[in-house]
Image 1 (cartoon, rainbow, N blue to C red):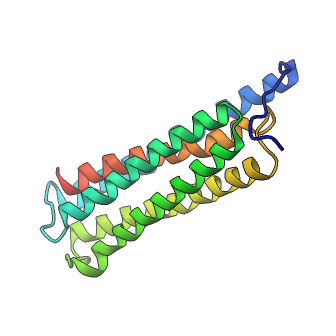
Image 2 (spheres, helix red, strand yellow):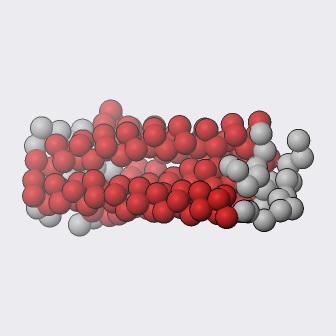
Length: 189
């Protein structure tokens, strides 16, 4: 199958309605997923106020946050490739995004093994819950990216799957934006 599959037809009314329903559902999903992150920020201030643990390595945190930001940029490039119906570029961006994300999560876990901070204290408890929740979202997002990559590389990109492939990239970008907020909250404020 060609990597540049362009649609030569317009969507009929039923297909447009299904696409709009998917877009609306995805918007509600993103809006609802902001709530757990807001609760994690509240948890941080309820448990430990403005205390920032001296055991957190600022440099390591900055490096994996930068990797997450770069992965969000590659995800945006994946959205652009998906919108162009370029299945090869979309699949490449999915793989690159996932690799950058895995490297960042491995560096994130480096904090636990190499830089001891009190995990049974108020700050540590909130930090562990936040990292745990983020990793669960991260794994779910990886499954979405992998699914989109497989669909793009095996079937190609057309009107029937363009939204779902692009949505996996958009959810990844949302997740990385949430991490940047959590990074600022836990490492600086």
